Length: 67
Image 1 (cartoon, one colour):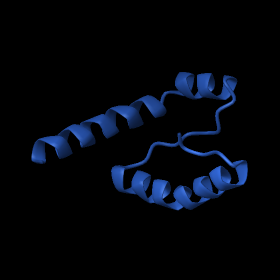
Image 2 (cartoon, helix red, strand yellow):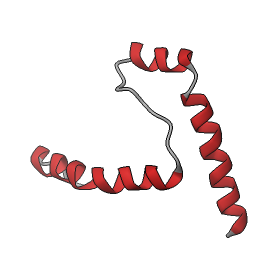
Image 3 (cartoon, rainbow, N blue to C red):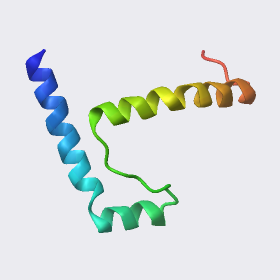
Image 4 (cartoon, rainbow, N blue to C red):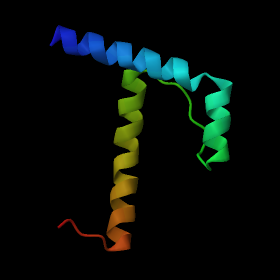
């Protein structure tokens, strides 16, 4: 478990470093992406938990069904 946590934190640090790159942000913008900000693991999971009900409602409205 400790090894998994270390890998997750290392991955998060690398992702955040990449997201601070102005060139990458420019590429995202050119592709129509919303602005992306670096965040820690806890902040990311808080964001995901907050977004889940919104995403579920969008799926419900769309009528999409799992096969």
